[in-house]
Amino acid sequence: MIEFILNDKFIQADPKKSGIAFLDFLRKDESLKGMKLVCKEGECGACTVLVGELKEGELMYQSMTSCIMPLANAHRKHIVTIEGINMEGLNKVQQEMVDNNGTQCGFCTPGFVMSMTGALLTGEVVNQENMIKNIDGNICRCTGYHSILRACENVVSDVGGKPKSMNTLIKKSYLPAYFKDIKKQLENINSDRDKSGIHKRKDGVKLGGGTDLYVQRPSELYESQPNHMYDKPKLNDIKIVGKEMRFGASVTMGDLYRSELFNNAIPKQKEFFKLLSSTQIRNMATIGGNLINASPIGDFTIFLLAMNSKIVLTKGNKNRTIQLKDFYLDYKKMDLNEGEYLKEIRFNIPDWNNTFFSFEKVSLRKYLDIAGVNTAFQVTLDDNKKIIEAHISAGGVGPIPWYLKKTRQFLLGKTFDEKTIDKTIKIINEEITPISDARGTADYKRLLLRQLFLAHCLKIDESIYDVRALIQS
Ligand SMILES: Cc1cc2nc3c(=O)[nH]c(=O)nc-3n(C[C@H](O)[C@H](O)[C@H](O)COP(=O)(O)OP(=O)(O)OC[C@H]3O[C@@H](n4cnc5c(N)ncnc54)[C@H](O)[C@@H]3O)c2cc1C
Ligand code: FES
Ligand code: FES
Image (cartoon, rainbow, N blue to C red; front, side, top):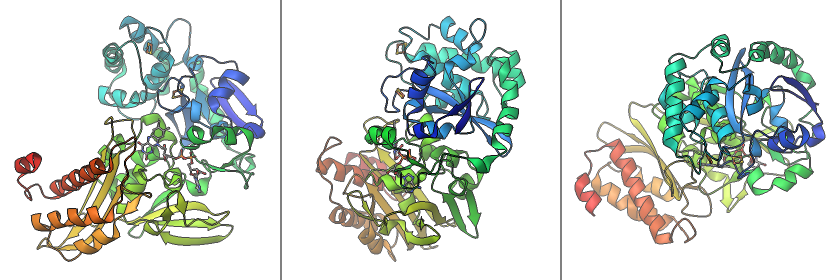
């Protein structure tokens, strides 16, 4: 059985339905119609629910778009819909939306209210910056965002500062009273963890967070019982072994964003995460899904290629470890054998005293959009600025997420200066094979990659070019 708490009700759902989207379960099986069905592609946030789970003994909530969330991923969790935060009269977030004219047609409103409430439950400081981050996956087509932001500001000034306890949020009318018993109930449901009944269909389609598959092939998931990878404990570890960062394939972008280990190993990369989809999607999207999807513009794939990562592929008891750069053979073709799955991702933590890393992405919209072209660059210099190691990747300029082997070879042993960079741009251009498509012409993509490579280099050493002359060139 798939077991979870839906608002204040314990649910046991049929494992045969494990592949249906949670929003359909809500609206059809439970007749809870508060969360809206709009895009069904994770883009608008109208279906946002809060997903609470025990992590190291603490109850932590994340927002997710239920239209592309598999029912199975609710297993042993607390799912909160707009009905689950209703109380006698409006709760405080709802009241602020009304008082600040934050709603007109109302279609987006339950999603916004859930994301704003979620911002109080993530364990992060409650301030306007975090509030805005939490609503980055919610779109309103008629009210305009200023009134919603005013509602956010008022919530922040009412509860702001350190994360508040559940009891405080109940007393202040943000949450109904039943929330105080949820942790105990989840401990009970999770106490017999080994008896889980949802991971048995080994022959089913492998399903992580579902953010790709529900958009690409939803009927396949509805009609069959998928092989759910998302909650497998051995795929969810983040650790450092020796000098190596290792994490399981089902670790999500959100897990890495919050991981102290990851952020200490790769400092200054929090900005990178903001360029990836939205808070809700990052909370669902696994790194394994990003790599196996094999999209030529997968952002995490491009990031990990420039970290010179290895991946561990598993079938039965057999593991094989290969370089990520050797994994992609042709468009959506990978060195992945029948029955194998991705278990772990590994890379050496660089010595940041002499190693520099940069990720750049251009898309039609700055946020919540897939890349036209993206690229990452890792370079290690000696005291004389000689390049002793380099890894460079680029997406959107060929049929696969591209590790630029020839460019790396050219860079090794050269001095990191203007002359080398100019020559490198020529080598990059010889190596890539962009095509014209909806994201831009081939020439435009070449130009973008040139500009992004220069942006990497200026981040590493801003004195290397006369920037004003460069912009004009
Ligand atoms: C609104 C929206 C915005 C997005 N924005 C971005 C963005 O900015 N940047 C970006 O890179 N991507 C973006 N994506 C794409 C997507 O979120 C990512 O590619 C995500 O990492 C996929 O992970 P998942 O767990 O959801 O994959 P799933 O959909 O669960 O699976 C994807 C593929 O991986 C396979 N798979 C999953 N886990 C394993 C495993 N352990 N072993 C073998 N096969 C496995 C599945 O069979 C499937 O083929 C966006 C998607 C949406 C819906
Ligand atoms: S309906 Fe738009 S994100 Fe779910
Ligand atoms: S109030 Fe109509 S879409 Fe936001």
